[in-house]
Structure formats: structure tokens, C-alpha cells
Image 1: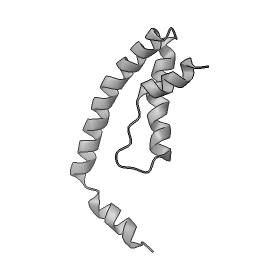
Image 2 (image 1 turned 90 degrees about the vertical axis):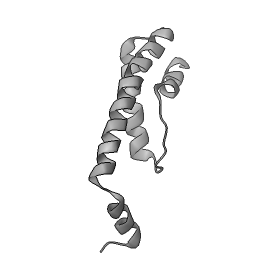
Image 3 (image 1 turned 180 degrees about the vertical axis):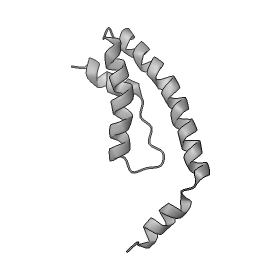
Image 4 (image 1 turned 90 degrees about the horizontal axis):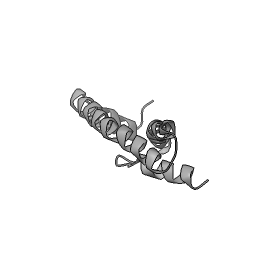
Length: 84
């Protein structure tokens, strides 16, 4: 049985929204991966740490977040790495 909240969510999902989300995710990935590599190098770390921060941070944020406007970037993840 589907409650009213689930109906409203599935009614808002469309091919246009999905296509826009894919385009925005690709744009963010193209910007955040080189940025995270440069932040790792500037922090005197291996560039591999920057790539991991760019990949794992948004995945964890997406799984745990509950907002349509979550913002997650590599700078926050690298700050915790450098502080150790």
C-alpha cells in the first residue's frame, strides 16, 4: 500500500527531471574531481586522497542526506584528512 507522500514523490519523477539530474551530476563531477586533486596536492597529500574524497563524500552524503539541496564538496572531506 502506497501512502500519499510516496504518491507525490513518484508523480514528481519524470524523464525531464532525470535527464536534468544526470546533466548536473556530470557537470559537478567534471569540476569536483580536478578540484579535489588540486586540493590534495596543495595539502601535500597524494592525489589519490583527493579522488577518494570526491567520490566517497557525495555517495555517503547522498545515502544519509534527506534534502533536495545537499551540498557536498571535496574541501570538507580533505579538511578532515589533513587534520589527522
